[in-house]
Image (cartoon, rainbow, N blue to C red; front, side):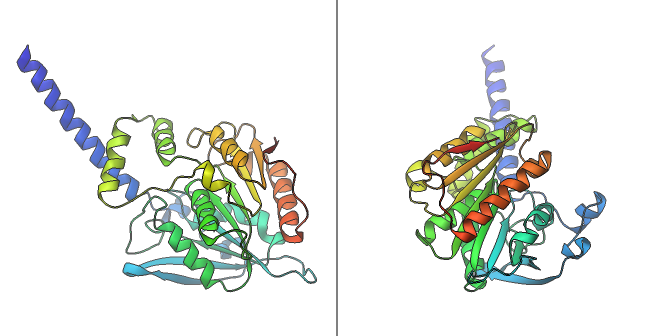
Length: 311
């Protein structure tokens, strides 16, 4: 009997080691959504497929990392006395600028310029692996510097939303560069979102996730999370859009974010999950975006109390 228990224990340890190694690898090497992926699904491969004018360039980062960028001309009507507004869309883990094209149409008439780029380890980005929001914050800050003096509207999804909020916090508030942030399905704790992602995929979570995060820390990677104390220092307007049925990023996390940020609003989308909040109720979604951008650009007063919720 003792021999069987020892054998079982060894087998369990080996299994946990294998699963931990696989998860730790996958976290840093997400699926690549590139042109081939888009063609296979009948999706647009670049802004040109949507009849949009654009330029393409790359953002060079330390270590030889190159991040491809689409620079799209917006269709905003001229506003006297208002500086140009550039929307920067930051995709989430496992996605790419190709996925972000699905959100462009809503913003085209509201901004002068839209910039989409691949995060390191994603899409067509080269010579780097995903760092789960750690070095991505520096990448986004460098991109904003590259864009010149225009005011920036940051639009992020999931990990991209956390990166966008983190950049605004690190730039210092109030920042004249950041006009506002739109965050789709953000999370407070990376670990909780990791567990949610595995659960949605029907895979086990803890303790494998704990071991995988330990591996990342040993490798020098610190996945980005948010906390209420830091969020209280975010002064630019924040619009959070979250699907009620989101199994990856808990809705409660967005409620905590909005409760901590002084100028924040939460829109909860019924029947939406993690990646479809822009499509389930497109009319309501687009109306909320238009109102937010109008307030952001014109600098109208925001609700006196944080945490206003609209469904």
